[in-house]
Amino acid sequence: MSGSVGIVKTEYVTFDTELQLESGRLLGPITLAYESYGELNAERSNAILVCHAWTGDAHAAGRHTPQDRKPGWWDDMIGPGKVLDTERFFVLVSNVIGSCHGSTGPTSVNPRTGKPYNLTFPVLMVRDMVRAQKLLVDHLKIPSLLTVIGGSMGAMQSLEWGILYPEMVRSIVPIAGTGRTSPMAIALNSLARQAIFNDPMWKKGNYKPEHPPADGLALARAVGHISFLSDASMHLKFGRRFSVRDGLFDFFGQFEVERYLVYNGQNFVDRFDTNSFLYLAKALDLYDVAWNFDGLDDALSRLACPSLWFAFTSDWLYPPTQTEEVVRALERLGKPFAYHLIDSDYGHDSFLVEPEKFTPFVVAFLDRISKGI
Image 1 (cartoon, helix red, strand yellow):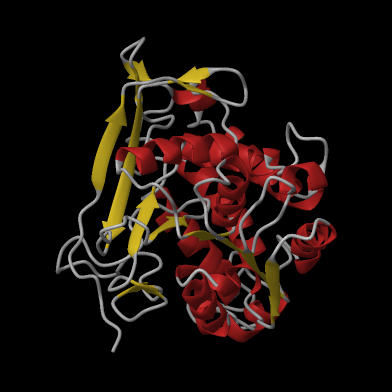
Image 2: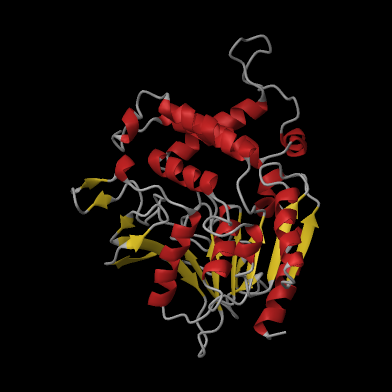
């Protein structure tokens, strides 16, 4: 019988070191927020690292207080008897650098100035996020990771882990990811950026936290949210229904899909920092697994472990063709991998909405890896 990990606490660790970023700049000291569920075994060989998506955080399972309305963002995956079974595995989730949920990011105080970094924060790449996570894994004295798993930006991190630290990573599970961000995805992020830049409250990143560029960020999130859905899922969820609150011929009347985007955008403003949103969007745009390698095959030749890949038929943000470009390269290189194209109508969000469609493959894969098969 599967259950909850119960009441959990976010932990914080600060590393008094400077991390050299892909840009050449140094960032330090570095604080990472993280949560963990389950226990390390005697050999410290049962650790699983979960990597979150763009606007995620370290709170992936359980609740912080009994009064919490919602559990962590992947609670249906993590817990006793669940896919990432905390009776078998030690599950670790770290908030990425650049975020606003406890790890060092644009909202953090720059120790050199005593003021928030804002736009003086360095541009990050996904690879930098992974190098920061490595500090945490070493701090916890974890010699190897049974698997690194994540969806969307989490899939990018899992692939980077396998390439950067092949001696530590025993498998990876990238879900709804890509080997490099497409021009279309970059274009959508550009629209989101312009929505923020054009908000007079943004003030070139020097807004007061209590007075953020709320309209710009809400619109930016709405642009992103459209890319997480699909035409089929919008038909299922909204159809062409008009809001019952508005008159059909009211000029400012809205369809239900419009109300949904406004509602989600406004809620997002309350939980995410604008500059962090921009920095993480830039990291997504810059993502290319072949960065600083001699092409895709050269990068993937570093991957020594088995990998399990998932793409979703209706995902138009990171469509199946982009995952298939990577797995074809793995096939050319003779690397051990498995790939599953999952039929789902829920677009990029399919991995969050219909996990039951792919999780049996994950359970079987982890069984094989943990047994050394």
